[in-house]
Length: 90
Image 1: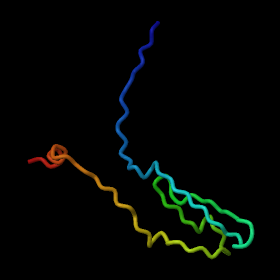
Image 2: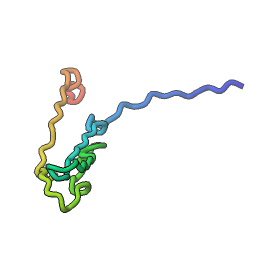
Image 3: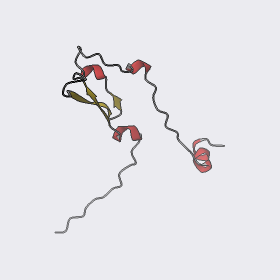
Image 4: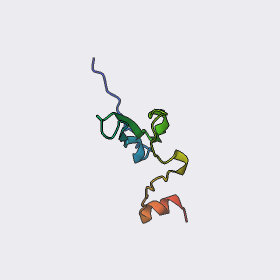
């Protein structure tokens, strides 16, 4: 008995490129003259920007830009004339 495999095409993803990008930060909280004490944390991943206060101990005086003051990058989207005509019927 032969089984037929039902195949289908996967629809294109509607997610932006930000979902696959990751950014990690490493800071040294040790004394300047002593051995390094490094903390590494994930700054952004899966489309989210993580709050550094979660990862950095409260006793460390670390300068960072709060999330509400952070500027988001602009991703430009280019459309061809044909794509624009399909979106806006005449």
